[in-house]
Structures are given as structure tokens and as C-alpha cells.
Length: 339
Image 1: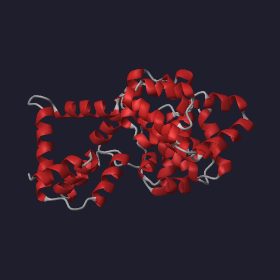
Image 2 (image 1 turned 90 degrees about the vertical axis):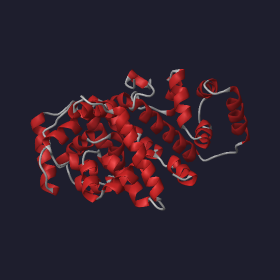
Image 3 (image 1 turned 60 degrees about the vertical axis):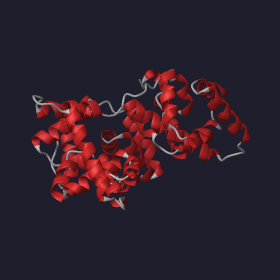
Image 4 (image 1 turned 90 degrees about the horizontal axis):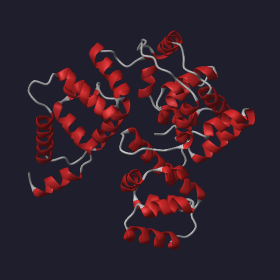
């Protein structure tokens, strides 16, 4: 491979390299690979495929070569394919998510019913469920991932949001038969069949996780509405909402890992709204030179809009949650629900 192609390949993200590899496989083979991925992974790789341009033959060969070497280094003769797949998925996604995907692979189910909503645009899902009873909407949002549910919530009428989140917070699981029935309702609206998988849904923690992904203005308005109707419930939810100031509870190793992942300009903006205790915690976990530079930049930076500061803080919290989900860091949040 030429030096130029080598540099270009090295600059590609993992998603772009995966997109290049799938494009070389052809439509049928690529489809077989993609059907075993989650909705978000498919969307990311699909976007990368659409944006790829100027990929040289040398770069393609390099990606394929790297993939072959990775496979050779991570597999061995005598290891069953099923066991290898299980271990890879568990390491990547955790036991619960891996079990769901393995079931889908083994049984050959297509993604339908409630699971089909995970593949849809948030605006489409909101349009699909907006006329349902708030309790039905609450169950649907509790079933989906928190970040997707937050987006869907943003497309619902303001007067519906507080009611739905309150219902999620007070939802104490759901009977398998009821979930299957709801799955059938969704099927009749866009065709499909029940997946048969159930789990405990709802609770104050589920509501807090969805709120964590809302825009600051939406979050404030929503909590004000819930507080008006049920102060105790609002207090329970707020005790579990992970906010920027909660980062002070990170252990030093976790804080250092988080700071490595946060762009310097976003950290600077977020720090404009941080209290002194959190600032000291951040300085402590940086090199002396980096801490001094950050202090100087903060002093030199003029006034900024509160919305910009809150936006930067939300971005950092999103990074923190993703690192926590992967097991890279440990979050210690309110109510000790984040571990």
C-alpha cells in the first residue's frame, strides 16, 4: 500500500472501515451481516456507506488485510462458532442485549412488532403512537432505548409529555401477556408478529434515563409540569437524573478517562457553568500544564449563552453515559442508581 493510502486508511474511523468492508462483499453478503446488527449500528454504517468517496483499491486491500489479521488473531481451531459468537456479543453488548440478538440469530426472526420501532425515525414513531392512550405511549417508550425515547418525547405535544413520563416513572413492570398484546397492536399498524421477549419496564429510573437525553429547556418544562401534579414523584425522578455537577462523584480514574474523550473546546464551554468544586476535580485530574492552560482559557473567554453551556454539558454527559454503558468508567449518581 502506498504511503498516501496508508495514511488515509489510518484516518478512517472504525465505522468507515466497516462500511468499506461491507461494500466489498456485495449486496447479498452485506445484507446477511447487517441483519445481525442493531438498528443504531446499521444506521451508522449505512450513513458511512453513503458518504464514502475516493476509496482507492489500495485502501480497500488494506482494510480487508487488517480484517483478516484480526479474525486470525481472535479465533482458533477448536472453538465452536456458537460459543465464539456468544462471547463476542456478551463482551460487546453485555448479557441482556447479547441474549436478545443471539435469540434473533438462532431463531431467524425478523424484526417486527415493538422491536420494529427501534428501526424507525423518532418522528415516525411519535406520529404512530401520538393518538394512543398515554399509558400505551408510556409502555412503548419504556420498552425503547432511553435516547430514542427522549427524541420521540420531543415530538409529542407538550401537554402529553409530563403525563407520559409520570406514567413511566410509576410503571412497575408489565405482565408478559399484556406486552404481547401491545406487540400485536403495533403489528396490526405496520404488520409483524410478537417477538415473545419480555422484561420489567418502567420505574423512576427509566423516566430519569429518558429525561437525561432531553434538551435542557424540554427537561425543565417537563419537570415543572410533573411537579405541579405530583411533587413526590417529581422528587423521586430528580433524585435519579444525572446532571453535570454529579461528575464530581467520579473516581479519579473515571474522570481521567472521561477527559480523554471530551473535545477541549466543549470542556471549556461546559466549565463556564460548573461550580468550583467540580472545576477543582477536573483540574486535579489533568496535568499541571493542561490545568493551567484551561484556567487561563476560562478567564479569557467572554460571556456565552446559557443554552450553549448547557448543550456542551449535555454532550459531555452523553459521552459519560456511553463510557459507563461499555464498562469503561463508573458513574456515581444521585440515589446511587448509576454504578
